[in-house]
Length: 296
Image (cartoon, rainbow, N blue to C red; front, side, top):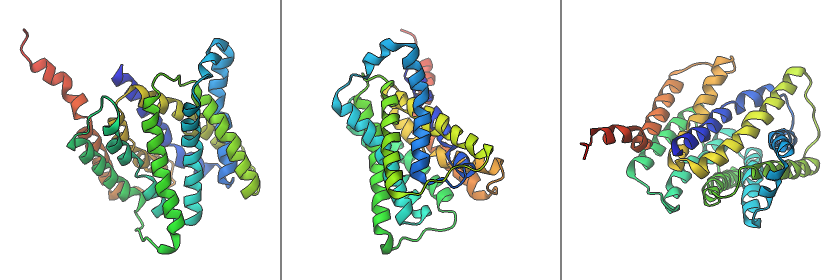
């Protein structure tokens, strides 16, 4: 059960690897407008399920703190991420924001029933090294003038890792609640769009398809899969495996001609894969160890 849930959580990481491709193909729509539309689309699968099985509506009646954590996680992360990108260079902001997998691995030691081992931290650091190779391929230079953006990026990392860790404590809360989180995030993003941005619509059918793809997968189904995975799977392995997202994203961009292959990508793949294997060694080698034990 735990392995299955971990794999479902990993499917979210695979979907997030499509984020850059779909975003690049979606045109010049402002971020909060794009977020409002994508989260509206992302709520549709949950709405369909609730419409077909109205008895599941009762599962939406949950403590206020569960709603607060979910909405703060989804909307708070994207609000802070967009704020970081508006007030700091994308490379540095993205690198700081992508500390969240490391925070998940380290913070998991505070969860009931979890134990933090040296190889979890070592695996997370290997993944971080691979991420740096990808995100900072053109160099990194931190400037005091961008302090607001750096702080927003760091808050962004704490927000998503905190959301993921706190979600584990609500393991009895149905994933159906993610539908409500998406709707609330769409509404709040729309309000931010009205107050901060000018409206820009896609120009072509391809751009509309990219927006739909964003809403259905990386800004839609991925959050349902992640919710189920962190509640029922191995959260330490998921934390380390999350570093695969920027590497896989770069590989997808190379495949579709948006980026050029390089030694950095190859080395990053080795670091991320090696880190994930190291962090998951208990799961990978458990069956072998059990098989080696003499029968009683």
